[in-house]
Each structure stands twice: as structure tokens, then as C-alpha cells.
Image (cartoon, rainbow, N blue to C red; front, side, top):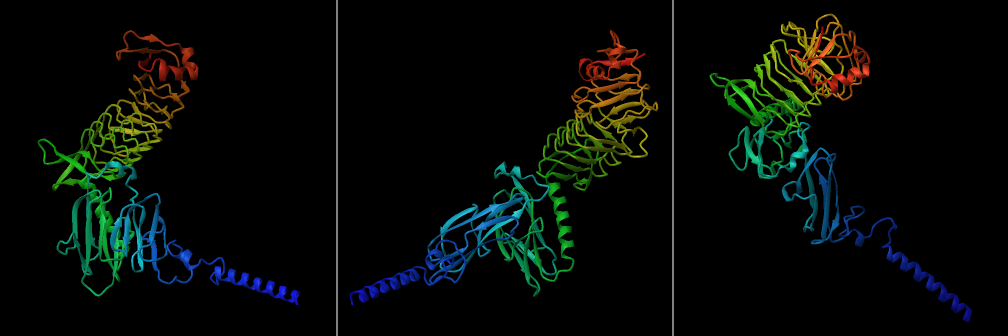
Length: 496
């Protein structure tokens, strides 16, 4: 009897243990969070726990940000939303239900609403021709904001509660808040506001945001608009041209009804110089106009420009591409001096004057060309040659000095600062080498003189007090290189 009672007791204890385990798991699979674990934790799976509201954390551009914090929460629970912004994008702020901005910090800590709510991290794409590092400039700089409709037949726009129009353009300070409104004229559905790079910012007709650290455009878009992408691209091109124009400084040229560009205050990496200002032509790029614009990588010069001034682009160390149009007649001293990333130049057919050291210390140069029809200059073997005087005035690391008699002199500073040049041959036709022609050619290790006899060097251009250079030394390619780039680089050389 006692054994039977003991067995019954053990069985009851086992059943109780099973029931306790089952109750502790809430009758669910252990991999499914319980109501307690979901509430206030941001877990968003399974059935909504009783008495909770849903927080949905999203972003308008998934490729621009990674967000977290979605889940079920009780009213007044602590919530925590984070946004990790990816390279090439800028964070605008956290928006509630795509409307009100509640924070401009990427990490948000707050309390849960008494209703379901969507918490959206709004980001915009930084245009490719903008350098993000200028975000450190602070908030005192004004940038151009353009707000417009993609098609006035579908609707109009308003900026900061002003009247409805096709377009608004106004300066706004970095970080300054503004409000836009799209007014529909048809029954077509409002699609949303699109940003400068073609990204959808919001589907709300009314939207408030802060000014980024660059010129920006918002476009209102509706359903059923034909050729939408083409229209957006056209508006984008127009905007970029208008924005560029706002960033230039101009000066009226004395005695002429023309203007010169004398400065640039923008942060774009690719810039087009306007062809006109105040209805008058822009004919000159003034002295030091773009000097030390270290982020400028590409410049387009219009056909209205006839003069590029002294040091106009000096030390634009990021400049990679430039085409000098056929309208340009003169290029000043040091115009492109120190543009170390410039890889190629094309001289237009109207250029008749190129100043001293105009392209010197452009160590990245690999090609030099002159447009056909130029009567003053020509190119051969990646050498820029003044035709009448037979003077090589500019060379690069890929230069081969012509041996056909078209070059008899290597000009002053012709290869100066060409640090990538490793070897060069001096043909028999060359009888003079200007002062500093190969100074700064730090990689030059081999110079071949076809004729090493009769060379003299002097600190004076008239060759007075000259010293005869050993033909055996100049026949040694490494010694000749050392002489030209260093030992006698500050001298004038002449043969015969």
C-alpha cells in the first residue's frame, strides 16, 4: 500500500513539473518571443501582444540608411530608434508618420505614442558633384533652394505658406527649416516630393525639412505625367546651371560691355562657367579666379571666353579635366600651375599666347594636344611647340621630342615639376635648353644626348661666363640626367 502511494506521489510531481514548464513558455515554441519579451523591446514578430501599439521604423531610401527599433510597445514605454547613414547620403531627421520632424539626431530615445506610429529616417542623396567634407563649414552660409512642379498642368507649389506658383527660388541658411506644399489641380494622385538626385523624399503633399549644406531642389510629382524621367532630368540640368551661376563673382571689364569671372564660392566638384551675366557676355576668367579650389575636378569653359588670366586655376590639385575652347586667345602666366592631377590638355585653335609656366608642375600630364588650324602652336609627340620659333614650351612624362627639326630649343621650365618623367632623348636638332627646363623632374634617371659635344652652361641667357660641359659626362645617360635636373638645372644651356 505504501509503495502504491509513493508511486502516485512521484507521478503527481512529474505532472506538476510538466505543467510548470508549459506555463512558463506561455504554451508557445521556445523560439517565439512571449508577450512580455515583445513589449518594450522592439521585437516585431508573431501576434501583437495585448495592450500594445506598433512602432514601425523605416527609411525613405533603404540603400541610404540602415534602421532599427521596430516593435510592439505599451503606451509611454521607452523606445529607441537608430539610423546608420551610408556613404553618399545625408540624414535629415526622424519623421513621425512622414510628417513632423521630431529629431535631427541619428539615435532617438523617447516614449511610445498611444497609437500605432511610423518613425521614418529621412535621408537625401548627396549629389556626385558635391564634396561631403564641406559639411564642417557651419550654418552661416546660404545655399540656393528651388521648389517647383514637374508640370504646372497637374499642380503648383508653395514655399513657407506663400502663394501657389510653378517655381520658387530662394536662399536658405544651412540647417534652416522650410515648409513646402504641393497643390493639385487635377484628380491625379500626388506621388510625392523628389529630391535633387531623383530620390523620393516623401509622399506627403506638405513637408518640412532643413536646408542641407549644398544647393538643393525639390520637385512635386503627380501620377500619369508623360516623359517624367526626361522632365526631371531637364529640371535637374537647369537647376545645376542656375546654382552654379549663383556661386560666381563677376567684375565688369574696364571700357567694355563684358564681364570677367573673378571668383567662385561654391562646393561643387564639376563646374560650368556661365557664358553671360546680366545679359552681357562673360569673356574672361580673371586673375586667380579659381586659384586653390582644391575640390574642383572638372571645369567647362564656354565659347564666350577669350582670355584665361594669370594663375586662374593655380593649385587646383583635384582638377582632372579641362577643354580650352576655340574662342580662347590667351592663357596667362601660371594659369594651371600645380594642377597635379590634370592628365590631358587640348589647346584650342585660336590660342596665340601662352604665358610662362602656364602648365608647369602638372605632374600627372600624360597627353598634350593642339586643335588643328592653330597657326601659333602645334603638338607632336605629346610636346607643345611654338611653331615659328621651333621652341618646345611644354612637355609631360610621355613626351618624345621630335627629331625632324621642328624643335631646336627646349624652353624655360618646359618640363619643370614633371616628377613622373623617367627618361628623355635630346635630338641633334636641339641646340639650346632654357633655364630650369627639367628642374623638379625627381624621377628622371636617363637623358640621351644624340650629340653630347659642345654644350655650355651659364647663369646668363646671353651665355656670358659660360662653362663647357664634358662631352663624356653628357654621354653618360645618368650623369646627363643629374646635370639637367639638379647640378646645372638653374643654367641656360647652348651647343655650338
